[in-house]
Length: 116
Image 1 (cartoon, rainbow, N blue to C red):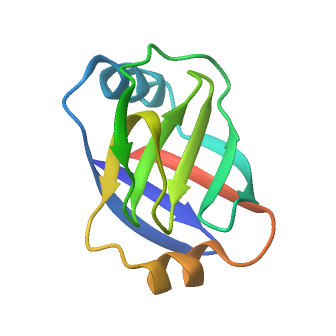
Image 2 (cartoon, rainbow, N blue to C red):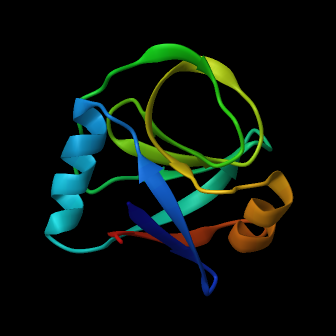
């Protein structure tokens, strides 16, 4: 399980069963990771990871709450749909578009990822 915190709100997420999610969990065992994220395409917040992770890309359509690895070195939280070749790392439990927009806010945001 992940704890994802932004703007004073924390949500939990369930990790996927793939080597990318496993590598992300290993990174988080060393401590929380803070990512400076920005809006992209009016459907996601994206920011750079401190290190690259292995990818397991597949053609998917994202849903609100998907936590996605992009190009091996960026992490995104989707608050709307998009179809592309991505690696899903986790899904935020009970996420809705409105709840995510409330948590993530407008513009840039600092997001902290930690093991729950």
